[in-house]
Length: 179
Image 1 (cartoon, one colour):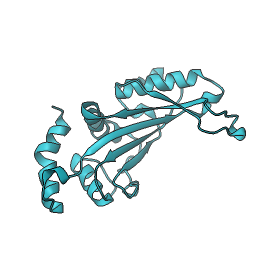
Image 2 (tube, one colour):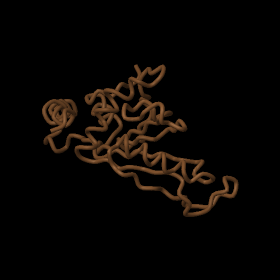
Image 3 (tube, helix red, strand yellow):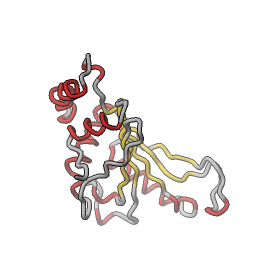
Image 4 (cartoon, helix red, strand yellow):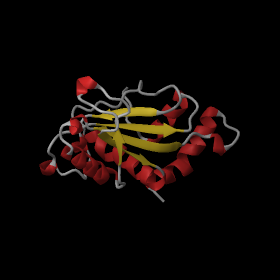
């Protein structure tokens, strides 16, 4: 069993049950899935850039990304409906806990001038979104092989009913929030 999952079962769930006065441990919020999205705007002109983005995302997550296509045509961006413009991965189960562990313990501390992640990025329903400016913070990415610095959006979907519950859950996991 994964280190974070073990911690969730043995330490976090009892702490959440006592803090929020749940009648059952099944009411305690848990991390449902993590969605990592990488928008590749230059894929409109250069389709090769999307291939490298897909490759990098697969290296980071250990799972093959789905290519996302444009929903609408936008003339200003020379974009047609159905053109591939990004990729995303949905992680669940063991891979999700592995990625969350790696993100909290290794990747986030490697961000330049890191002071913690924002407390305001909750959506009101207990989900947390964070943007990463460069893919180089992940240990799997080789600095010399990177052609272009790309960012990504990471959405942590929880079963929490409120932002307060979700914040407590992520704090227990060790998410470094700003003071």
